[in-house]
Length: 201
Image 1 (cartoon, rainbow, N blue to C red):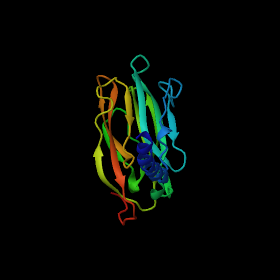
Image 2 (cartoon, rainbow, N blue to C red):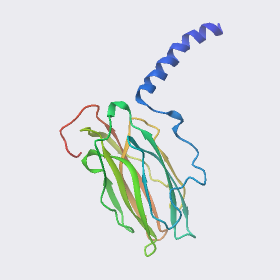
Image 3 (tube, rainbow, N blue to C red):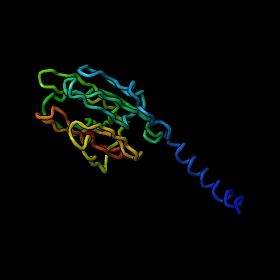
Image 4 (cartoon, one colour):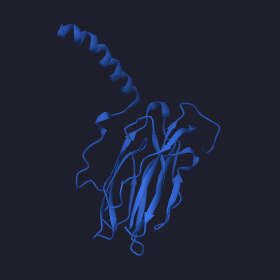
C-alpha cells in the first residue's frame, strides 16, 4: 500500500518541481534577517539595489524612538521569472520628501528593485526614492494595495510577497507628526506575458 502511494505521488511532485523550476523561483530564497542584516544604522542614509534581474519581494524594518524616531531597514530580492525576460532599463525615481504623505509608482511600467533614503533630523523622518527596472514592454494589471505596514506606528514591519505572480510597483505612505513614524501600503501588480503599447499604466 505504501509503495503504491509513493508511485502515485512521485509524478505529481516531479511535475510541480519542474513547473516552478522553469520560472526560477528559489523557494529557499527567504532567510532570517538577523540583527546584522540591516542596510543602515539609525540616522544614516542608505542606497540598496537588487542584483541585476531581481526585484524586491520582502521589506523588514524596526523602529527606535530613542535614536531619532528612525528605522533600520532590510530588503530581500528574488529573480524574476524567465517569462518576464531581462530588464531593459533601470533608473532612480523622483525624491519623495520627508515629513509628507506621498503616493508613487515606478514610471514607465517599472518594478521596484531598490530603495534609497536620507534621514533628516529637523523633521525626524526620511526622504525616499525607488530604484525601478522596466522589463521590455510588459504592462502591469490587477493591481492592489497591501494592508498598512506597520499595523500601528512604532511596530515592526515584516512584509513578504508570498504571491509570486505579483510584484512591488510602488507605495503610498502616511506620516504621523506625533509618532514621527510612517505607515506604508505597497502597490502590488501582475505583469503581462506579452508586450503592450502603453508607455505607463
